[in-house]
Image (tube, rainbow, N blue to C red; front, side):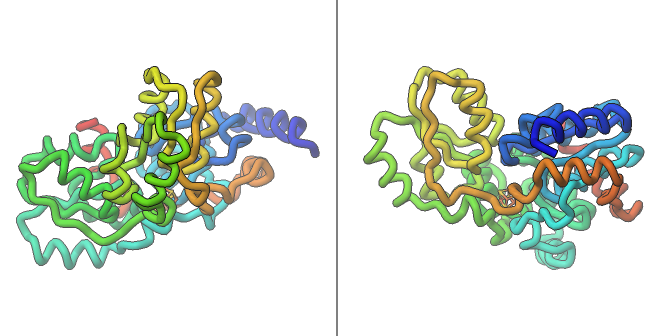
Length: 303
Ligand code: SF4
């Protein structure tokens, strides 16, 4: 089947099964083109919680599909490739959080949504890169254990200096591998360009940026900006929407290494296969799901 025929067949199956295709902004271009809704983690969580569809086909990595299932247990959630994981989420386990809680009994645990259902279940609040500072600022606790991303955590600590933040040493390999030196080098080529980066980048990168925000915030900033050339410090897939929405502007990836291999695992064939077979259903233990949903719902309430 060629690509056009496959896209048509996917749409037919989706209609038949009352499905909705969700895609993260880091997915391959054709998956974003196919999806009914594209967004970053927060937007996808909100869409999963409110969508009327019976089946959610979640084109993203595992923790995202799990989040959709936690928020919408009555819906069938399919992940086209089960092996699409997140190395950042894998850098902490529930047991590690327990140990931190024992060391800091008065602290609240705020976990970035890039974490397993088990880690969410023992956290007090969840957050995404869009709302992390807001949540840390607004919650009553003065001491916060922030897991698992140290870069996002240190960025939040800078935004909310009145709180004491204890960090876990996790990081996103895709964002963390870019350095301040990479910024200086690309700035020599594009001296007039604005630099827009994701807070999963290292401190020496985000401190050089003109704007730091989630992928959706970067999209919004780029649309509203008068600048013609912008250097983008987040995953390559974000260029698809940036270019589509701003054809007159130039976007340059901060580093050609900003590609997340897990986000690129899903193809049109995979979407077609799971829709045909209804395989790869996301299932979560009910006890874990209920506890994780408390932390996630607190996040939606504060966003
Ligand atoms: S880009 Fe980083 S945080 Fe996002 S899925 Fe890939 S490894 Fe995880």
